[in-house]
Length: 482
Image (cartoon, rainbow, N blue to C red):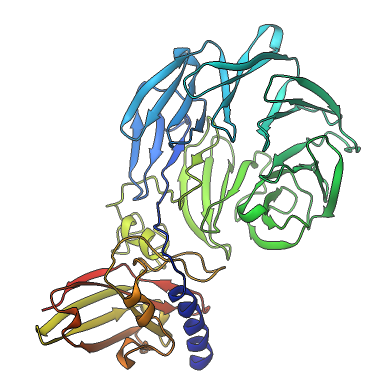
């Protein structure tokens, strides 16, 4: 087992070392519309798990502009608030706004209440100037998505026969659904950047159309699909209520990953949205029961990574350019009482809500003279006894380098540079930079260097294999060479 694991781990770190140039991990904050348990305020969770509330903004729907600012529909204050992490920086007066969705060109479609249950759709720029509309829609809107051309597509509640498309210039076109949906199953649709429209209707068939609703292809899903959304790299994320399972599907229907939810079975169990974070993990928003609003993150192997409660007013939105992390308690808290704070556990990839998921610890010290120094390391990873490890070194403590997919979490918390490339070679550039943890999950070694690193700060992290051969990484430790 050791040799097989070591070969696999060696291959993984070799791929990490060749990943140039480095891409910094701009961990994206996640914003929540007004929720039941947030006190009626717009909520942001930063990458360290710290919760921020924005008093006086009762957000019903949110979207982003190109600068990452949040546009929050606030019907109670008859405005669209413009918010940065520092707080509210402006607003667009708007009476009756219900939702907002962003277009690829930086404009927005705003849905507003009209008379007798009808609504209007208006396209505005980032400053609130009207670009198209308002366009009157009499359907009871269930979903609205924007395609690659900036057109908004609308489905109606309990309407499986009709769709509405409003192009970017405000032209409304009613469209007949070119297939039959049995019973009262709802139509769910999503769009992808290549201009495709994907429609699911609660059956095992998912269909792909062009912007004129001409069928391009279809495939059979592994279970009836009730919710569908875009995933990474033109993949799809779909949820099946019948199977309580989230699927990542290729555009041709190939199953890339699956997560079977550990909650369900209640008449009140429902899923409002699913999405795939840039690191390959799945996020699920839904209700477990009466007022049991919850959102949870699952890794690529279906293991629960993080959880939050209280979502009830809308769908959470994350910075899709960064790595999503949600943990509602402060980064310094330790809710599972395992001795590691949320901040540490989220960095190294262990579960901050599971005491059995103990994060590995790394210590490193330097000694010697300017003519030659050494770094002594100690690793303690009790859950990975008898598993191989590598020690990664870098002169760049910023950023983070992804492990080879599908092991996208956690990353090596070091910046890419020649020292990292050398230290992650298989075999290592020094025998003491790699080995096997003992029966207690411990290892220690001393690695000597010449004067080339004299006076430099070296950042150290350990990559180790878990019992299932999935790699993990410790947090970085900085040492200054003599």
